[in-house]
Image (cartoon, rainbow, N blue to C red):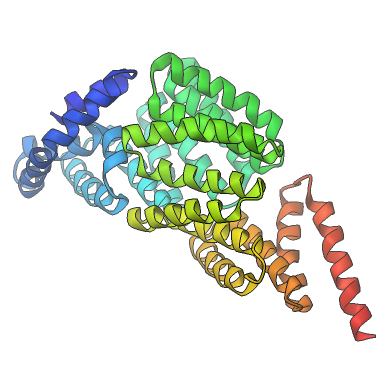
Length: 390
C-alpha cells in the first residue's frame, strides 16, 4: 500500500491528492507492517528486505507526514537490516535520508557525515542518480552552515548529473537550490531566473510540493527587491499548495515569509499573527532552524512597534542561541545584527557594535555585496562610542 501510494504521488498532478488520501487511510496498517518487519529482520532475510523497503516506499509521503525523529528510527532499523544482508545501494539511500532527517532537525554537521558516506557508496556502486542526490544534499547542508559558495560547487555537479541521466525532478531541485545560494549571496535577480526554470519543471512533471517551494522562493526574491505585494501573490499560491498536501514544514516557511511581507507593508500586528503560527508549527515538527527564524521574525515585528524593544531583544537572543547551537552561521550573523540594532536603540552601543561586526565579518567572508555598506554602519557606530568617551 505504501509503494502504491508513493508511486501515485510521484506521478504528480491530480494523483498527488489521491496518494495522500490512500496513505492516510492505510497509515495504521503501514505502521503495523513496519513494526513486524523490524522485529524479524535479524533472523529472516525477507523480513530484512521488507524492513529496508518501508522508508524507501513512499519516501516523499513519509517526508510530509513523519516527524524527523520517527524517520530516523525507521532509517536506522532499515540501515541495520541492509548491513546485515549486504545491500550497498540501499545502505547509501538510507544514509542519505538519515542525513536529511538530521538536517531538518537543524543538525547540518551531523547530516554531512551521512551524506559523505552516501556519496562514497554511490560512486563505489556507480549509481549516478544517488550520487546526484548526495551532492545536492551536501550542498543544502553547507548552505545551512552559511557556506553558499561551497554549496554552489556541489549543486552545479548535481545539475550536470541530473541532466545527463534525464532526472527532471532532480534537475529542478538543483536549479532551486542554486537559486537559494545566489539569493544568499545577494543576487536576487539571478535567483529569480533559476526559480522560474525550476517552477516550469515542477509544473511539467506535476510536482505539487516542488511547485509550492518554487513559488515561495520566487516570493522571497521579490521581497528582497522590495516588491512586497508581488511577493504576497506568490506566497498565497504557495500556502494554498502546502495546506492542500499537508506539508507542515512548507507551511511554517511560507507563514514566516508572509509575515515578513506584511511587516514591510507597515502591518506589524498582522505579521506577528503569522509569525506566531510559524513558531507553533516549527516547534510541533521539531524544526529548530525554522523555530529560530520565527523568533527572529517576531523580534523584527516587535521592533516596528513603539515601546517593544525589550521584547524584541529577548526574541533575538533566543534566535541567536538556536543559530549557534545548530551551526547556522548565516542566521547567527543576521540575529547578531538585529540584536545589535535593538541594543543600539536602547543605548548599549558597545555591545551593539560587537554584535553588528559579526555580520560584517561573515559577509566579507562570502563576498556579499552588502558587506561594506554594513561595515560603514559599524564604523559610524564606533565613532559615536569614541565621541561619547571623549
